[in-house]
Image 1 (tube, helix red, strand yellow):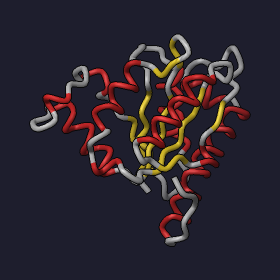
Image 2 (cartoon, helix red, strand yellow; image 1 turned 90 degrees about the horizontal axis):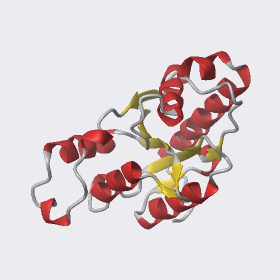
Image 3 (cartoon, helix red, strand yellow; image 1 turned 60 degrees about the horizontal axis):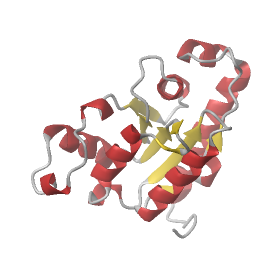
Length: 183
C-alpha cells in the first residue's frame, strides 16, 4: 500500500513535517510512506488555471492519484487550517483522483482542535474518506519536536505506528470490498 504524507507547514523545523518523516521510517511491511516535498511550489489557487494547471499542480495531482491513501499532518493557524494545506486542497477539489481517497489526519497539537475539525469537514466535502482509526491527536512531550526525538520516544513511536496500522487495516478491509462507512 502506498501512502502519501502531506505536511501543512513549510517551516524548516516543522513538527508536522517531522511527524511525516518519522512515519515514513516507522512504516510496517507492506506500507510505504512517501513524504511530499512540493506544497511550497504550488501557486495560489486560481480556478482560471484549472484548464491548464501549472506543473506543480500536475505534480501534486499525479502523486495523490498514485497513492492508495493520504496522511495529513497540519498545524492550526488562528483557529483554522494552514494556508499551505488549504491551498493544496483547493487544487485537488476538481481532481477526480482525489474522490474517495482514504485520508488520515493527525493533529500534532491536541490543544489546536479547530483546524483538525475544519480539515476533516473540508475533506468530507471533497468526497475523501477519512479513516476513523487513523485520525487522531498526538500528545507530543515538550522535548519531542524533531523526527529523531519522535523515533527515540517509545511512546510517540507507538502512537505513530498505531496511526499507520489504522491506515493499513483500513486499506486491507477496503481492498476486500467491505464498505467501511458512508460519507
